[in-house]
Length: 194
Image (cartoon, rainbow, N blue to C red; front, side):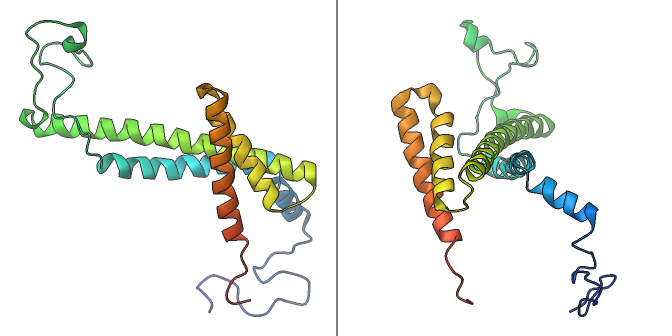
């Protein structure tokens, strides 16, 4: 099936691929080499993780049950002020539902944005770490097999949990390695068409 503006039919005998480009073109080779580098894979995985994490974070923030029923500010105290944290007697929080609609929306969107950005950063960190480590291990071992993903998962889990101590790092290593092994094994399964 040909779409308007797209070349179709069989590949010409001149060596051009069905997509209309020559795989022997030096520019194409340079782009392929750049896309196969560990740096490019790490950056792309981090960017994709950031985008996916942002969408996921926004969705989860909109579905959250822990939405505050009270505003963190009291009228007249200024933005961001919270007299309750300072222990001021007589502090009464303002119900979010009693605020004007514009203030409710402002508060809700600000909360969604903060949660979305936080989740996006976390997904980007996990994606970039895993992809970079896996690419490095693959380059060192000169193999592309299940062991690369398991080792990368173990290292990624340990790095992410390092602030919790050695036991947390070991649990993170085991958890990420098991998850990575399961996903990688599923992705490497032969399709039903084969």
